[in-house]
Amino acid sequence: MTSQKPILIFDTSVINKLFDENQEFGPLAAGLEAGYWVRLTGSNISELAATQEPERRTKLFDTCRRLLSSGECIDPFAWIVEKHVKAFDQNEEHYEWESVDIRNAPIGKHVALPTAFDDELAVRQKESATKMQRGFEDWFCRMRPDFDDILARGVPRPQNFAAFVTILQEPSGAFWTGYGRMIYARFVAEEPDEQKLRRFAGRCPPFLMMVLALARAQYSRAIVDRPTKKKRAGRVDLLTSVYLPYCSAFVTHDDDHAVCLSEMARIAKLDREILSYTNFRRRLSCL
Image 1 (tube, rainbow, N blue to C red):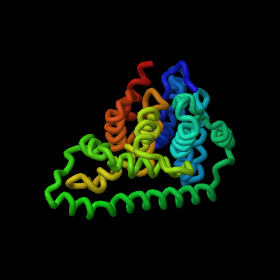
Image 2: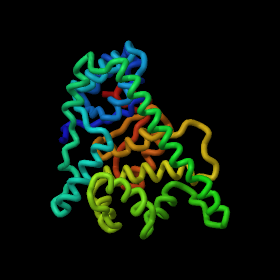
Image 3: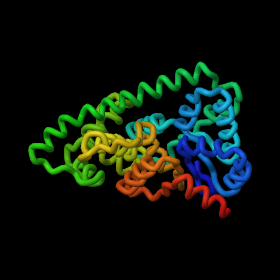
Image 4: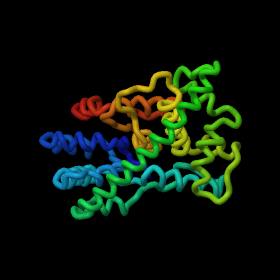
């Protein structure tokens, strides 16, 4: 599963940006092939498949095929966490997170077929993504009135995300008995106790990152004093944190996405670079 080259994972915004720089993509692709191993994610493919303009969609997947000349496809984030939960639950003693194979050759084969992604699929993908994002926002935003009431009674408001996570990770805190248990229990017959969840999070960075993603969604929508009115990292943006353990650097063209991933990686003590597209392009031009 490892490459001798540094491993890159792109946010889908970067693949769109690479396509928009079409005239320069040839030299860019050559630099990528020479210096990096690219992992396209299940999230990348789902988001690109939802592109409504047929010509743009076709050319975006042409870009993906070029990227895969020095790379591979990996599972969607939910599949990755499911594999880890089941592997840990079945044999905790011998579980090693890096031994769980998250490569997905069938996705790569679909990308290789020019006719695999059509208008009908694009409509379904777009509708599904919109529905999931709306549900995600509704679920976390509905929490705000209850937390506003609690905080109005004198409970100190966490000053930053790291402080909020510290509170959630206290014994019997929602980090474990809420989000952690909810994720883990989806994939097994018997609900885990808090100690098992703590052991798992300590040994499985992808699981830890998914729990942090849900905590970040709660913080930015229900806890901060004045929620930002600008575009904030959405469901897929936050959950792409699951991919961070599988790369040397993650590249995004979305500022809030970069900030969120950097905070989560720092809290998880995960040493990964989170690069803006501009900085990545500058680095690539030096190769």
